[in-house]
Length: 225
Ligand SMILES: Cc1cc2nc3c(=O)[nH]c(=O)nc-3n(C[C@H](O)[C@H](O)[C@H](O)COP(=O)(O)O)c2cc1C
Image 1 (cartoon, rainbow, N blue to C red):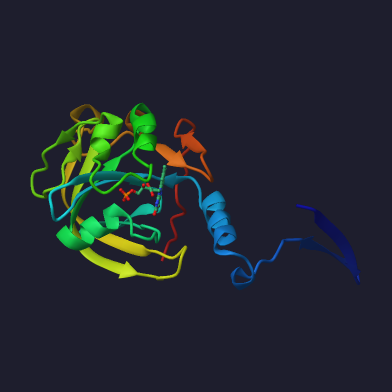
Image 2: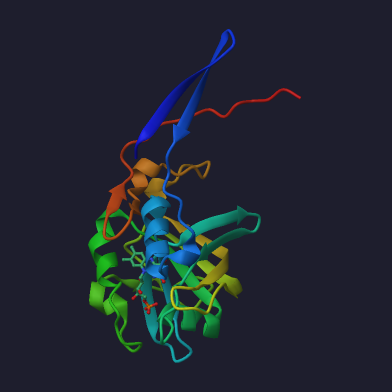
């Protein structure tokens, strides 16, 4: 991106005027796929929620969602966003029907299996079978957890908000975490988790991913009042 710098003399004071050229895009003038690409290539890296759910008929489903994040701590809430598909994605239909899901954290060790589950499989296919990952019973909710994932969050649906019913639109599924399961070796007595030990992966644009190997710390400013 070209950056032009102009130096402007104003009396005895020199003023530096920085003109930064940016491409300005009105989303109403571009296709939904361009807007999607602009978002997914810049809102990065995104964590990946590996969502296990179960249909009203008891068919287990597993799919990754990188429109995924934590919302707040009291009560602990998380969200993920299924984008519209016709017919709708199995995960959305399942959480609408049963109001429960498990968010499993995706690590380097299970990245390839996670990717296998993202195919457009028929609703009667369990992605646990496709990926070889192991379903293990949850404490409170019906959908199973992923054994190979070091962190599982059992959730009850708090709300499902349809943001847009257009192609390319989607819904926000908000879940209250009713149980955390954390691999013993990853959590200290004070309940602190070492991200280096967790080996999470993040999603970039397209089919690119990132490891969390390069960490730095910053202490926030303390403002005296
Ligand atoms: C890493 C990754 C992240 C994804 N994130 C999302 C997402 O946030 N929203 C979405 O609708 N689909 C997302 N997908 C695609 C779904 O996983 C895919 O459509 C899947 O087949 C849906 O499965 P289901 O029909 O069993 O729910 C993602 C795929 C991958 C590989």
